[in-house]
Amino acid sequence: MQIVSRSNWTLPAISALQAKRFGARTACSFANQRPLSFRDLEDESNAVASSLARLGVQRGDRVVALMPNSREFVVALLGVHKRGAIFVPINTELTGAFLEHQVRTANPRIVIIDGGLRPAFDLVELAGLQIGFTVVVGAHALPLAGSERIAFSSMVATQPLPADIHKAAPHEVCTIMFTSGTTGPAKGVLMTHAHCFFFARETMQNMELTERDCMYISMPLFHGTACFLQFYAAFLAGAVSHIVRKFSASSWLPDVKSCGATVTFAIGVMPEFILKQPARPDDADNKLRICWSVPVSKEWGLEFERRFDLRILQGYGMTEFTVPVWGTLADPLEAGCAGRVLEDHFELRIVDPETDDFLPQGSVGEIVVRPKEASVFMAGYYGMPERTVEAWRNLWFHSGDAGYFDARARLFYVDRIRDRIRRRGENISSFEVENVINRHPGVAESAVVGVRVEGAGGEDEVMAFVVASAPDLEPRQLIEWCVARMPKFAVPRFVELVSQIDRTPTGKLRKQTLRESGPTARTWDRISGAFWRL
Image 1 (tube, rainbow, N blue to C red):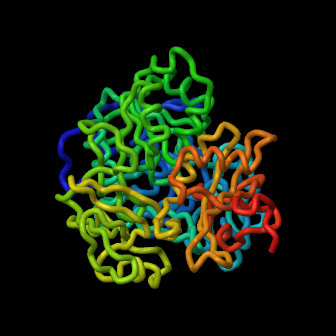
Image 2: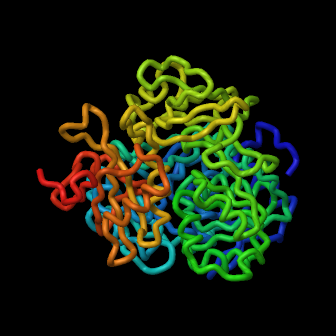
């Protein structure tokens, strides 16, 4: 796409431009739903905006959406933006207290919900909220208490009126996305139109997206990665987005081949799960040219590139501040190397996490960021001013991530600050230890933390919580695997086999509870060669 003027840094403006440019060309295709052309998306979202107006939705009102990846999600996103309201997508796995916290924080005027997800609200206390309407997608479902039921299909069928379409400005808040809540209640990130646009524009430019590309989306649209780095970026480039309901390691490659995908994203453990699928001689017979993955491990990165005949691109970003660091296709893959700072738009430094003093090149510290462009960062955490001030101390946004710059001014991501482990005078990355453990054929997943025990001299001992995929996996076997593949100081002292590892609503390992639990009677101790006795 040609350069877009700043006044058009909004999804509604981009939609109007693309509908005029591409018309009946497919913008989004789906596994089991009708596709959306660029014109369809423009017209149907206009109808939703007008329907919201008739329901009394005003500029700045919050509209909560509990919806899986679907045609309706994309139309609702754009329709809410066109009304000048704030779209609040909620993780579809949430129930009970987790769901209640986010809904109460958002305090919405309207809730759009997939009919099949209505039971998630059964244990949610909504007293005191002013939810006027429950918009139901698909299957019949009762409205939330005190609200009126509206069918989403009727909203799409509404005759749109130009007066109902708000002319959005780049600085206006249009979306609230909730963070993981790793160390406390999930925080709602206030995202402006320019913020969301920057996710898309930088992705389009750095992945060299054009209208000839097809973006395969298997990650959830209620996260910024799929919504803005994938869908919005492809939409901005005039490319097709092929959207499936959810990620499946076994169907990933067949899906990629059948839709003709040229670019995709696979983050976290997704690439490892894909690699664990049985290899086939025709794995490389696909059209993929780029897969964006973070973080990348040396244990699987090059193997993934070779097996599927593609390039892995890395970067560094957060919901709060887009992606200020990108790798390039000109550089060979290097594990942990996020790339270089986009210095025209951002400043990024490494600081001492205790003092905020800048650290020299090569030193590991906390990554802090600030923008040079107006409105491309979050506008704060919704309803949490104290957390906003805490994150922005000393005029820098504090990421909570550890990293360092190498001699070529490239940023290397190391770990979350709290996930760094200090043992025998060495800093240990839990991410790196987990990567080695997860490569064991009898391991499904693991979480590694530092724990304090008597006699450790005030330093951490490494403890691994492991979910086995083989019934005969023994801690001693796992330690032997680690000894052969990592430095001695990084080999876990403690191993505990568990049936599952709790995750935050956005899928991150919930490590704080693991640290607090420490060794138990079920924990195997490498030093004694026996189970831990308190």
